[in-house]
Image (cartoon, rainbow, N blue to C red; front, side, top):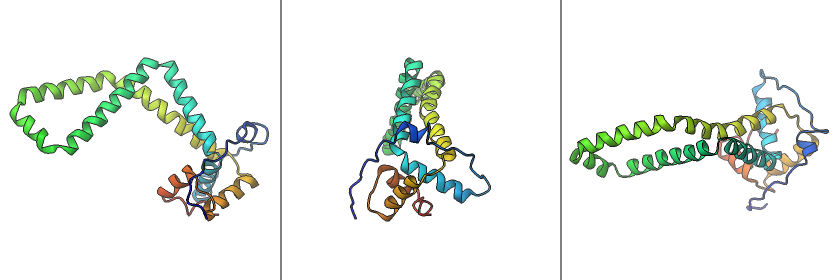
Length: 179
């Protein structure tokens, strides 16, 4: 058994979407089987899904480049501010007490910035969520092949570890891909 993480191979477009691909609406009454199908397809097509996500994100970014950049900056600023405030509560409390008017101006400015950037943040989130939705739809509808099942068995036995396998394991989904 190997502890090294390997990148899964890129599957052919024929296998992923075209001629040999078989699609079927999952049985929503059997959630275990549906979950198994999704997890298996996430493992088998993980490199294809990664490239698809990057391409869709770039397309959304090319259609709305300024809004995408502003959205990235706004989300980054909010995240950075959140990290700063949560890590330095004493200094933030002291600043509010010592400079109440400036604190109020910062809060109103931050609120205005968030409202002003809301459209850009939505474009950025759309650029992230559209690939996730497309990946979920494909992995739900794509029927598994013999190669898919064999590859997933090798992953679950532990002979080979891939990034998606580690991600699914962290989410507690390793037991659903064994069948």
